[in-house]
Image 1: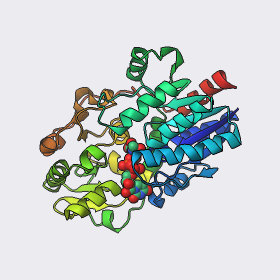
Image 2 (image 1 turned 45 degrees about the vertical axis):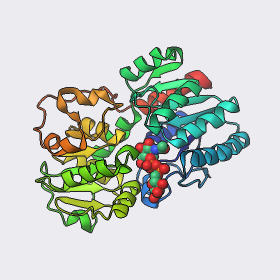
Image 3 (image 1 turned 30 degrees about the vertical axis):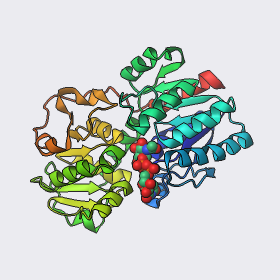
Image 4 (image 1 turned 135 degrees about the vertical axis):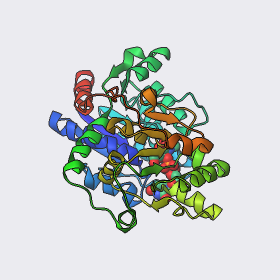
Length: 357
Ligand code: UD1
């Protein structure tokens, strides 16, 4: 069986790693098409190196642009690749513009599609990710759901027959990485090394969603709150946030905040595992914090990962309440395993072989 994975953005490289490894073990021929949505070396190549992912067979080099420009350019290039390689299946990941482009290009060519991380819903139609995931789920032939809640959403939309609950492949890579960095502390660059990071007494933060980073009032309130926290904050700064801060003349590294351009996946898992709390608007990081057992404050009005909200492990927060929420005490209840046991990628390989070989 020949499967082609379409990836393009940072979180998709993380999910690709366990899939690539599991496909090798299962004897599935695996091609990788990288759209180039994320192109900075530290947003892209570093993940392939660190997580030992096979190099992409195709680099589309699409880069940044408006939604239509970016998605359209990807579709045109993916169509050529799909025609050239005639895969049995196109595998799509998550909810980015790269996901949607792969879905439209494949469905029009009548190539089978499997969608990993199917069934997630924020019910917020203002999010580009919500458009991407709904459209991709409805174009796909097999919906690989990470949670029971996702299966419920798919069932409501009449997609139950095409759905399979496999767990979340991010758990696979997160747990493996936690073991690696626990026994072998990653080295940090000068900015992070210059901060006095006492275990359990600092915060790690990322803010990149368009609804926060592109909104002047919200982003100012978020940054001011973080800068005023009574504990160091390591802010890993996505290019979208860096651009907005520069446009507003905001120095991100001020007060409690130390801003760094990027960290490796291993450094991130290490930082989260030893932090007092995480402050983020990322989907993946909320879940990683929960899996690792670090409280998270999510600067959004809803989450696609409601399981993380149990007992206050994760709390949704408006920018103005960020400090109060981030400083709450750590829940005492144990975290559970709603996202699977760390073997989701093997299950994906098995389900694909059963359905498409
Ligand atoms: C995308 C996804 C989002 C995901 C996020 C992970 C969509 C609609 N959004 O958002 O769901 O959570 O990736 O990071 O697909 N840029 C660089 N270098 C890069 C990549 C981007 O400088 O390597 C800058 C560019 O100015 C670009 C901006 O970041 O315009 C936004 O990048 P883009 O890929 O369009 O969206 P993300 O905000 O990263």
